[in-house]
Amino acid sequence: MIAIDTNLIVRYLMGDDSQQSRRAGEVINGETVFVPITVVLEVEWVLRSIYRMSRVVCVKAFAVLPACRQSLLTMRP
View 1 (cartoon, helix red, strand yellow):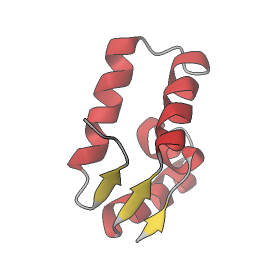
View 2 (view 1 turned 90 degrees about the vertical axis):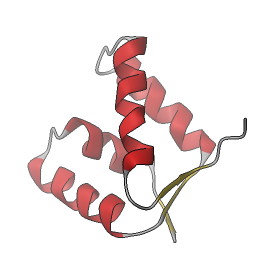
View 3 (view 1 turned 135 degrees about the horizontal axis):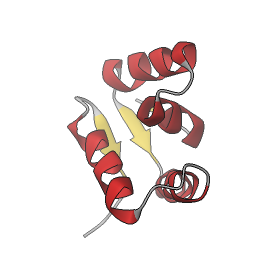
View 4 (view 1 turned 30 degrees about the horizontal axis):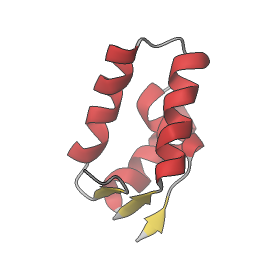
């Protein structure tokens, strides 16, 4: 299992750099990944402040992550 950072998730979600986005997809879809809660929070901040996503769109973007075959989030109910 590897831990992934904010940049990797943002590249994966946004697809704004073809080479980095492709590599991010390979990592996220190819391995079991650990996403620390601090990374989740930072990704949310980047999506809302830099990419100007609404809350609804941001939630939909996050909905993609658990659907990835091997992703783990550190969130408790």
